[in-house]
Length: 74
Ligand SMILES: [Zn+2]
Image 1 (spheres, protein in one colour):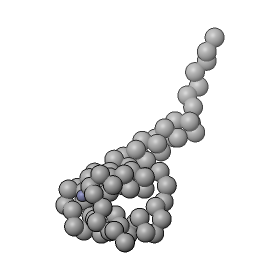
Image 2 (image 1 turned 90 degrees about the vertical axis):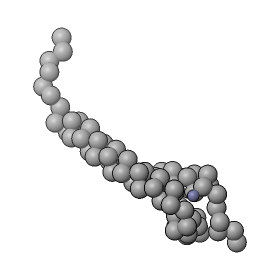
Image 3 (image 1 turned 180 degrees about the vertical axis):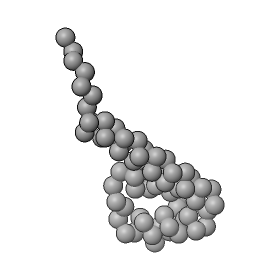
Image 4 (image 1 turned 90 degrees about the horizontal axis):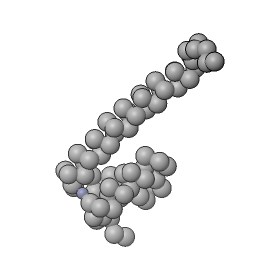
């Protein structure tokens, strides 16, 4: 089993993880790579940050939908 992924593969897995849950083997490989690779760990932190930001933005957008402004359009 090759657990020593390249950084490119690790980045792929990280962005894939944003869209769908990784299978257990990929999760483990990614974890192991992140333990060995400071660069990818940074990338993951930033992705997590970005993700929580977009989640917050998404929540805001949903709030707007939930409370539409009463604007009459003629
Ligand atoms: Zn790496």
